[in-house]
Amino acid sequence: MRLDDVLADLSAESVELDLLVGGLAADGWATPTPAEGWTIAHQIAHLAWTDEAARLAAAEPEEFQVELRKAVENPSGFVDDGAAEGVALTPGELLTYWRQTRGELQEALLAVPAGQKVAWFGRPMSPTSMATARLMETWAHGLDVADALGVRRQPSNRLRHIAHLAVRTRDFAYLLNDRQPPAAPFHVELSGPEGDQWTWGPEEAEQRVSGTALDFCLLATQRRHRDDLGVRAVGAEADEWLGIIQAFAGMPGKGRDRGQFA
Image (tube, rainbow, N blue to C red):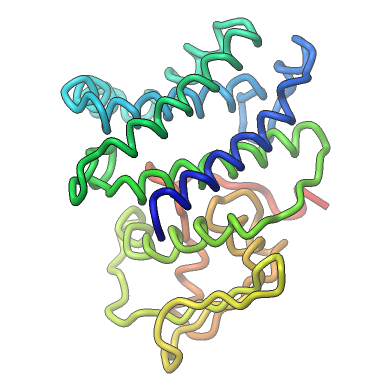
């Protein structure tokens, strides 16, 4: 995947979410979302804060180390603290801040020298991987906003980036859960929103995962309970992975309850 292509899809994902929140009245920003304790304002503030952190990592690495130290000192609260800072703004100010940070992030990633990786709260990433991670988070938190507003979004082929990230971070999910990653690669086959088949891993692999790209991404971002999705596993190791899969950095979350969404 080319950085320009991922950034274009990140921009499109951001604009789609912007259209959901841009016309909200001030009290609409206080609408609770499925993330416990987080309103719509928290969701947008988190995206803006993370975009700014990613921009610092790409353009001002020494300044980013300050944020990294805050994360080390307060691993369970630094994300919520970052969101709370944005919630303190007025809705108009917060929306302007998010638009600014996401635009500046794109410029910063394009300016990273070829072959250079960007530090992050987990492992260092290439600019393309960073853009993919930002797309994943924008989609996932955008889904929280859509759920809060009762809006059903149409899936797009941008899901391929999120699915790719989930497959690439398989071993990371195991390590986060204090488990040994499997030695052999899995075969993952997903149906894209437009009917395309997307595959990862050797065709002859014994451990296999299949389903729609939408359901796989919902599971990998922990936005739906596994029992409510049509993602299937063949093999004990593949089944175990689907129980711990996560495409995002940080500690595993509680996810969503079974049957929470019709």
